[in-house]
Length: 269
Length: 285
Figure 1 (cartoon, each protein chain N blue to C red):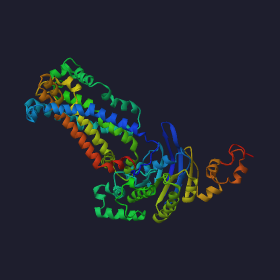
Figure 2: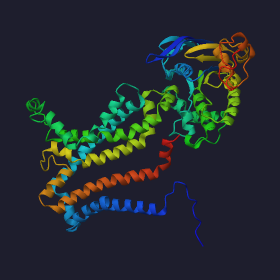
Figure 3: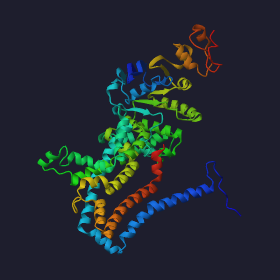
Figure 4: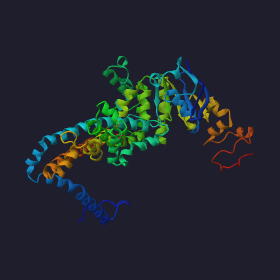
């Protein structure tokens, strides 16, 4: 009953975005896809959400052959980088959307939908803002509306594309803790994409480091810090932190000194 | 005692420059836009409003008004649908030849209306490609309603698309993707997300399209055949009356035509004023 990704590859016009990705994560796991831009992490997330289609490969989740399900039947709660809130709908309208578009048989009654919206608003701590429009909200508030909207459909999995990318540093820190707490509370399998190693290591149970369409390493944050599997991982994690000494000791010629220390090749022993 | 002065911004021009610019604009608008329009109404009422109203109630005038409204009623909904489809595929899909398609949509703006009318004569006219076949099957396009409608559709095609393409491109696909991931099907996504997001631009495009559809002269003139009471639209009727030295009648019909256009503009302004907040919200996020 876990998420298992098997040999997923995808090319845009012959330019490969993903070159065969294998990944397994237990159910209820908070998984980070970490990598520089162009590493394929967002493509992988969008494939999981059904917004993009893999050329080859298989994904199994929750006992389902995931990639054969159309996006609208996956119940994957997707939170977009720029939130993609419906701008002509109020906060309540946004959150209720996923319930309102259900086929008539499966659609809850109006009162029930209203109750659910209130419940979700209090979950994301936005009580009293239900009649506002997205344009009248701050970035952090929009983010939480986007999350409430994704949670309204009782998702099987939560997919977050750079969830803090569009927010300023202070809001980002607060939201990060809050999101982690929410994850613990709901127990949902959550996959999020980020290029910020500090964010990935501080938040996730499991971090998959991607580079040029391949997975370099999948490990828990502590493991990743202690034993980076490749020079790329060590380098990528090392940004903004002192470089672990053993890396230079093992592979002296493989990498230059840490960035921001005068640059160039001066650090090579 | 001086009134509190507003702090001057760096981009503020010298008061003299402002005064000159504003007066030039006002004089230009008055001279080239307001005065001709006022003349039309003045000429129409030269022999009293009664004569003008009588001219409008005359059978040929009534036929022209009906034909104009009918043609607009055909052309505007079709172009609204075509324009929406075209801008949808240009703004939301990536494909080869996208730029070419966007350019093609602008053809009616760059080609003289007379030429667009002639095209239909060349295709459907008696000497045209399908002329003899259509004569054999008793189908009339040129010098009849279908030709007039076709020419009008051609000329007014870009209005809706031109309004929608920039807006839809700017809005991107994000909200549609969100709707799909929340379980909405294609139709629901269109009617609940895409259409509401562009409704003001669509309405604006439709209003402009309508104004032009009722006022089109050149293309319609070529295909209409100028049969009074049958294939004369309002603009053609105005010309016919004018050539017959029936100035009051000509200007009366012209006034009505101008009034229809003014109603369109007033409608648009009212909408902008009434829904200013909502429109601003639709544009920014």
